[in-house]
Image 1: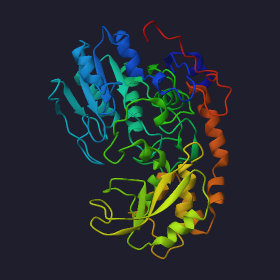
Image 2: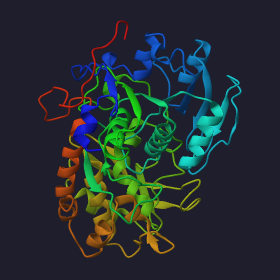
Image 3: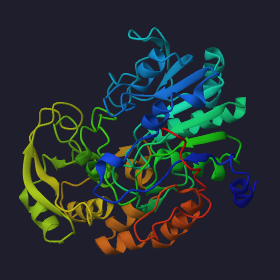
Image 4: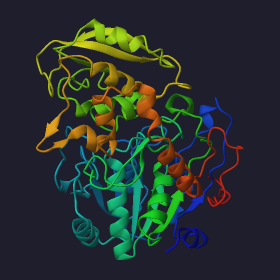
Length: 431
C-alpha cells in the first residue's frame, strides 16, 4: 500500500487523541497517554481482553504502574509481556525474567525478549487478547531495543487482527532527528529497521511510522497522545516521572548522551561506563590518559564540557581495572549534540595507539551500531569530525521528510502546528 493511501485510511496509521502543545517551561501540563486514559476510566479498553507490553517505566504521575492500576480498576488483562530486562526490571542487559506469574497481580507474565513473530502470535493467542497496549519509555536511539519490541508486537497484532493501543510518552531527548541511516547488510538486534540513529520520535510516532512504512497499514492502531509535549521539550522540562528504562539508563542525563556515547560499545579498548554509577557519561580505558580528554575539549563542541576522569568498572569491560578518560558533562541541552560529540571523541581517540574497534566474529560492532562501515572507515582514514557527520546529510534530510506525515507534535523550526497528516482528534472530556 502506498504511504499516502495509508495516511488517507486514517485508522490504519493510527488515530491520535489530543496532542495539544503547551508552552515550553510548563512541565505540569505534560501528561502521558497513560495519565489521560486513566482519567477517562480506561474507556477505550472496556469490553475487551487486554494484553499489556510494558516494563517498570509504565507508571503514572504518582509512580503507580499501568498494570497494577488497570488490574485494580477491573480492566480485563489476559497477560503481560516483558521485554529485555523483564516486566518488573530485575534483569541486566541481554537478560529477561522468564515466563511466570506476577506476585502482585497474579497475572501471567510472558517472556517477550527476543521473541520471534511466531512466538509473539503464540503468546497473544495463549493470552486470548483482543487488544494490545504498549507503554514503555524509549530514549530516542536506534540501538535501544524496546523500539523493536514495539515493532514485533505490532506485526503480530496485525497478523492476528488485534487492536493495538500505544500510550504515548515524551521522547526524553526531544524531537530532533540526527545521525546515519541503517543500511542493508548491517541490521542486527541493535538496529533492525531503516531509521536514523537518533530518530527523534515518541513511541506513538514510531508506531505510526512503522505501520505506514513497514507494515503496509495493517495494524489497527490507536495512539493516546501526550498532552502538552513538543519536540523542544526534554525530560527535565516535562514533569513526567523518570523511571530507569534499564539498569544502565539511570537518569535523563544518561539518555541525553546515549545516542552518541552508546557507540563506545563498538570500541574494545574503551569502557562506556557500564559497571559505574554514570554509564555512558564516563568513557575511558586502561590504555588512555588525560591527553585524549584534552584533545576532545579542544574541539570546542557546543553544549558540553569534558572532565578528566578515572574509574574502575565493577562489571562488563575492564571489570576491576582502573580506566582513564573523561566524564561527558552536558552544559546546554539546547545546543548539545550527542552524536557529533561522540564522533569527535572517536576521531580523537583513534589517534591513540591503544585504540581498537570491537570485532564480533567477522563483523565490527561499530558498523552495526551506526548502520554501515562508513563511520569506521572514515575515522580510520583520518577524517575530521565535520567530515564524518557531514557524510549523512542527504540521508538525514530524506528521513526527516519521510517521517513528517507521522509526527504528532510540533518540532523545533516548525510553524508550531501539528504537521499535515498527523490528524489528532480533539481530546475527550476528562482527558
